[in-house]
Amino acid sequence: MANNLDPHYLVALMNYQFRSGQDGSARRMDPPSHLTSGIVDHHGTNVRTLPILDALAHISVSQPNSQVIAIALQLKPDTKEIRLTIAENRDVADSLVNHLYNIWRKLQALSDEYAGQRKAEWDGEQMLSPVIPLDVALPLKMEIFREVYKFSLEKQKKRVNKWFRALCDFMEELEKRRVGVALEGFERNLSNAMVSLVLALKLVFKHSENQLTDDEWEQVYWYSMIANKDIKLVLADRHGLGCDALAQELNGDGDGDPFQLQRALEKLISLPRHIESLFGFAHSPRLRSALQYHLTICAVPGQAQIVILPTSQEQWKSLLEAACGQPGQCQRNDARKLFQRFGSRARKCPVHCECGLIQYLQTKHCDSWDNVPAFSYIGVSKLSCSACRVWIEAFNMLGGPKFYTRGSHGKWYWPWVMPTMGVGSLRENMAGMVLDEYLMQLEKKEQIKRAGSDSSGASPSGAEHGVSNTDEQSIRVEAAAAVQEAGGALSGLISDNVQFLHANVPHSEG
Ligand SMILES: [Zn+2]
Image (cartoon, rainbow, N blue to C red; front, side, top):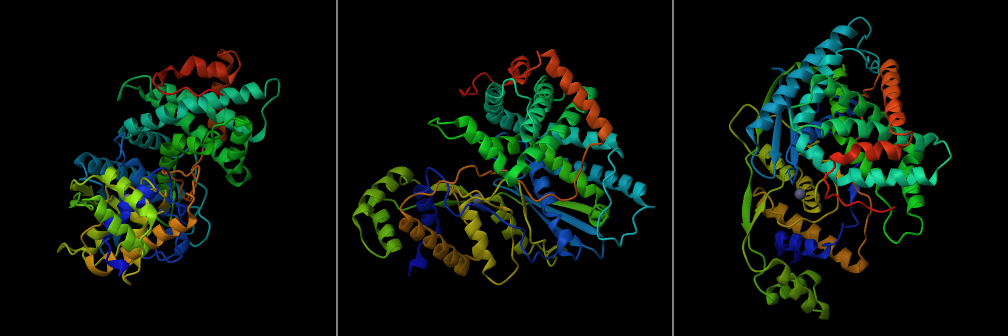
C-alpha cells in the first residue's frame, strides 16, 4: 500500500526533512566485491580502475557551478574497441567530448613511452607492478597537466576561492600558536604543502586564461606535485584523524565548528591528484590494453521531466498520513510547511547523470554495443545524492546487472526525477526504500549532522605517481627561498602572495 506512493513525493519530503543537512546514511562505499566486465578478468586490477574512472569524470568538469559528470566503460576485446559513455544532468557539450579524446590520445602516447622503457624489465607475470619511473616522458606529463588544468580552470578557481582564504587564516593561527617552536612531522608537512600551494596558485591566478608561459606552467606542475606529496602525508596522519585533532586544538573553546581542514586540503589538491591517477593509468602494464584499443566516446542526451507535487496543504497531509500509516498532530504543521516550500507549480526536474547513464546503458540503441555489458563501476565527479543512491540500490535489486558509484554525500536534492525506465517494480522498490528511510528518520527524531563529508571524495589510489628526489630537492629549495624572501614566516608569504583571492571571500578570524 505504502509502495503505491509516488517516489518523487517522498524524495521531496526527504528534501524537506533533511533541509539543513545530510541524512545519517551518508558514506563512502568500499569497492564492491563483485565488479564485472572490467578491463581484465582480475578483481584486484579492476579495483585499480575505479580511481581512473573517477579521475576522468573529475577532469571533465569545467563549469564553476553545478556541473556533475558520470562515466561508464565498455570493452570489446575481440575487436579491440573501448567505449566511454558520458552523462551530465543536462546535455554533454561537444567541447567536453573533444577534450576527453585529446587527453586520451596523450595518455596513449604516455603509455607507449612507459611500455618502451619497461620492455626489458617486466616479465608480465609478477604480481607487483614495476615502480613508475619518475623522469620518463616528463614533457608529455607536463602537457597533459597543463591541458587538463586549463580546461578545468574556472572550476579550480571556484574551489580555491571557496577554501583557500580560510586555510590561510588557519595556517597563520597555527604559526602564532607555535611561535618559537620548529614545526615537526605532520605540522611541518602541512606548512610545506601550504608554501607550495601559495606559489602554485599565485601563478594560476596571475593571468587570465591561456596566458601563462610554458615555464610558468612547469612551475605550477612542480609545486602542485610537491603539495600533493605533502598533503597525502597530512591526510594519512593518524589514519586521517590528525587534521581533526589539529582543527579542534586551534578552535579551542571557540563557539563555532572547527575549520574543516581535511576537506579544504582534499578540495585544493583534487585536480592535480586526479591527474596523477591518470599518469598511474598510463603506466599500468595490466591496464595497458585499454589504452591500446580504439576509443569511442558516446554522450548521453540530457533528460528532464515535469513533476507535479501535491497541490494543496490537504494533499500533503494525506500523503504524510499514508506514509506514517496514521494521522497525527504534527502532520498539519508539516503539511503547511511542505506546501509553502514547494508551492503548487509544476517543476521541470533533471534526471541526474548517474541514473540517466544507467538507463542509457540498459536501453537498446541498435548498434554493436547493445549487448556489451558495461563495467559495473561508474565514475562520478561528485558523490551521489541520496535519491540517486537509493535509485541505484533499487535498480540493483531487479536481478539484472548491478552498478556502483563511490558513495553518497547524504543530501536529498530537489528537483529530482527518476529515469523513465523500469517504471513498475523499480518505482515500487524506490518508494518503499525511501519510505523506510523517512520512517527511520522520524524514529530518530533528532537529525544526524555528519560533519566533514567531502562531495568531491577521495577514491582509493591506483598506481602511485611521484616526483624524483632531485626534482623534489630543487623545488623545496625554491620554496624555502620564497619563504625567506617574505621574511621567514609563512604568514609573510601568505600576505605577500594571496591577493589573487577575490576580495569578497570571507576572512574568518582565528
Ligand atoms: Zn543525484
